[in-house]
Length: 382
Image (cartoon, rainbow, N blue to C red; front, side):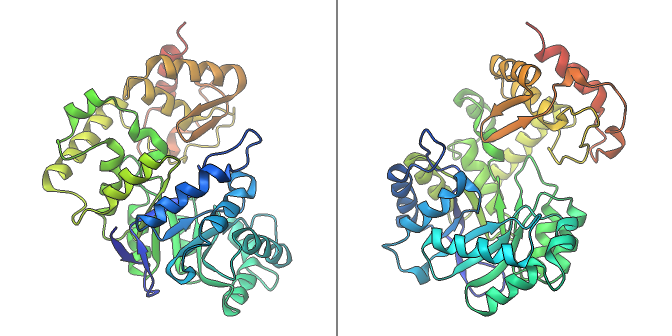
């Protein structure tokens, strides 16, 4: 395993982090500890020292699984990260949640504590002020209950920059992969400011694992074992990245991802060229590829625009035609569809009334109305 510095904190973290959101579950939706704990320990035995959980993951039982898994290991050698959402709460409720997290993790302190899915407006309303969550978090840090404060976010790049420039945080977790690079400059800024930079979604929620072996042989050099292998190594080739998180739920996945993160050089020149060729192919196939940034949302008529485009890319890019049609039918019928690691909620493309509010917001200048018509025509076929 390769290790990197978590910003200027002086703490070394494994290049691959274990995301504890997708651990095995039981029928009631809680964590299956008998299956989850051996997975986490296998990751630790292979050199992973950064484990990431959150207050709400797997109905709160993800943190419990992490706490149970780390018991045999020296606590000081681990970097345990979790996240507390602050929307709708103030200092008192934040303290209650922190105490619950500490109890679930069965630890005396949390290494990296995030404000979960933080948006600039939420930070202003619930983070700041005498009764705000930031003051409570800073007090917890001063008392040794938390080592480093961080935030995760899906806000706009401009608003994430504002959060970074507050100077209140020592780390940040953002989505970044070669299908979605809109946070690249933000990650660079955070790194320059001395923050630890953690990447979630390096394999794009599983979308990069969708190609068949035949397609991979055509597109990638022999040195690349799989699309996830290339995706993780591409993220780690960015020197601004401290950790690439992966939500792993099989032994095979753990061992493959550890191997990807353990290479001395993340990408060879041939592999860099393969990434460029692959990205160009995606852009061509997806016709001005939708990055899923969500700037076009919300749709006033409730259409999940990025979700519909994602279904179209499963059909057109990955060749999963029947699967994409089935999920589109679910979206039309129930307003919900499920993909690998991703849930889509909203109306299908056929519900678009062509009001035109979305197109001026798209940074890619995608002809959204025209493409939604195509989605409805192609995926709505019997």
